[in-house]
Amino acid sequence: MSRKYATLNGVKIAYIDEGEGDPILLIHGFASSITFNWIGPGWVKALLDDGRRVIAIDNRGHGQSDKFYEPERYEPDLMAADSIALVEHLGLKSVDVMGYSMGARLLAFFALARSDLVNRVIFGGLGERMISGVGRWQEVAAALEADDPATVTDQGALAFRKFADQTGSDRMALAACIRPSRKKLSAEDVSKIVAPALVAVGETDEVGGTPEGLADHLPNGIAYTIPGRDHMKAVGDKAFKQAVLAFLNNQSE
Image (tube, rainbow, N blue to C red; front, side, top):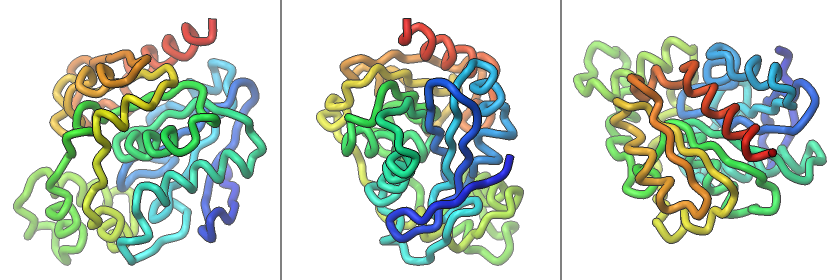
């Protein structure tokens, strides 16, 4: 799928805009991209086949969007503002929004900043740790900066390093993205997200925490456990797709 580009908030942002119907914006996770989070795992096809207009963004520092090497350029408010600006650039009055992992966190900042632009939200790969914090990001940054991945002993950090190498990402930009202290959202903050919400996390996902731990704080939240999946393998899961499509279609009835 060919990329389109727009300069938003002074940042060149790559995105796709495919299909017709109710629009849904997809925000990918850390070290990923439109290609690896949404096209490869089959999300774009599934949503297009369901009769939706699919918009997906390469977050700054990722994919084909501009890269920066200063951590302050990756504060979540700024990254969420890129997605908000894209929706406005496309002239849309409101959209459904789905984010995975870091993208789910950015979605929360999006929804809190501009609730008027949000219809329904799907938080994938991030549950109660949206509130309690994921942690260990300094180890991930160090793994990304290491000259030789064989020197990385932290297995969780090594998984992100291997993924970054696999996707051909700019490791230094990713390290800058992950180095700032991860701004947490309180339970009180989360309770202000009033849009209908699905929280879907893998059964064995140690990164995201339980879906109930987030959904219970959302006024209109629903928790869904993706059977037998961890953080990395849940992304393209068939049951996950079915749960999302059921949520979107049930909510529109």
